[in-house]
Length: 269
Image (tube, rainbow, N blue to C red; front, side):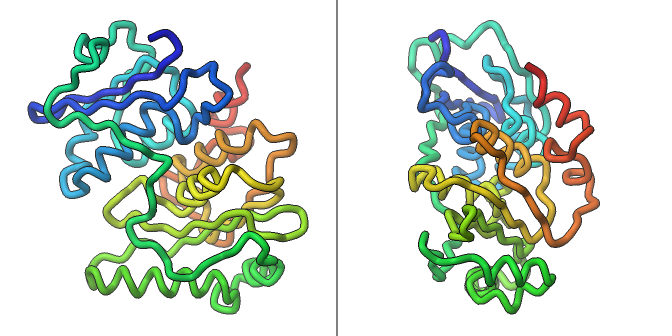
């Protein structure tokens, strides 16, 4: 069991748990998608979004050190976590889970509302760049189509509940789009635009050399942590630019803001 991460929580007589996809020493391990804490909280929301917020308010316990992704996810979508727990429950060691166990497969996940627009790898993002820099999303045809289709589908599902319209695009030095994401988190709090972008990029095999990440709204702690974990191992960390500020408590200070507590924590050796 050494090197494997486990996370679990107990709520209303049920025990939800998840295991990291690979041991920490495995080169295939990506902390922003394979962490047991990330997999657990995401799976609880995907299991039943109506009750997830109540369940994850119970303490999440894990034997692995929290990545920046996990720290942010706990802040945004859960409540509290105990990490570095020494004793792993017997039912995890035996492999016999209890009723309500959750063993998610994050690599296969998709957004709850998938936009019908398609952003191909070879599409140049120069028009998108200029539109974002000008502060005009409506003139960026690709992004506008993605957001427009997504909002229409959201309103068809429930006219009263529409997620905050946020889009993100990852491009290389030539301006070619490597991945994209839109916010689909009105009932699944873990599916923000940046998180969806990173999952799509991972599923595609982490292609290209990311140079710039455009986000239409400043990233929250969860998304900033995911960005940090996803790209910190690259030779050059991509520039992150956002169109609109977010002064809310969950976005005011993140790991991407130099000089913050989160930034200093992530930089520790």
